[in-house]
Image (cartoon, rainbow, N blue to C red; front, side):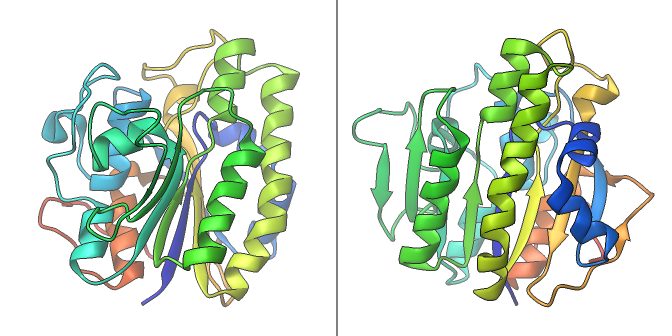
Length: 270
């Protein structure tokens, strides 16, 4: 039974992560981490894939079919499953996570922060401006870990998505932002591992040089997944791709909580 930090780097392509994020690749190369290429579900849009990541179900099952579907989740999810089994939760994330797992629509005054043990996200810090700097989002998440030591926390920076939609995936701005995220993670991951956390770093979808996502091209669908345990032992780079539907049951397994019957894909072997 582990504590888990799940970092969802919105819009981070698999190939960009591999080429630009040197600290994470160092951990893979030295077998201190396990790395998968994950095939994202369709459509490769943010809100549907937030729900897929947290519920382990496809769009046709969970019903959040586009970014325009604004409502609470109706499926068993990571936050609810953790709280149901006496684990504590937190999130530093874009406000769509608040709408999915606390209440909708989001009120940018009332819902910006929450500290409520009755909610399934018990400690939440939610931002609503896409260009919010990644360093601020990571700092919010790191502060929640420092202050509350939650068993499960989701940290969700939007910088890659914002840079990709503004400049395209084949741009210095997009590639350099991946380096910037890697530098932040190089600072935080050793602290989190020392505190007993297993850290997962992934993305919801990628992006193309057309500055958009939603379709089936590899640039849209192929995203990374790095798994780092407190013991510092990993399997290196795994050749066989993983399914995005496997992420939620993997987190449940790490947290030591039952995997709901709705999560039909097997957990990954770490």
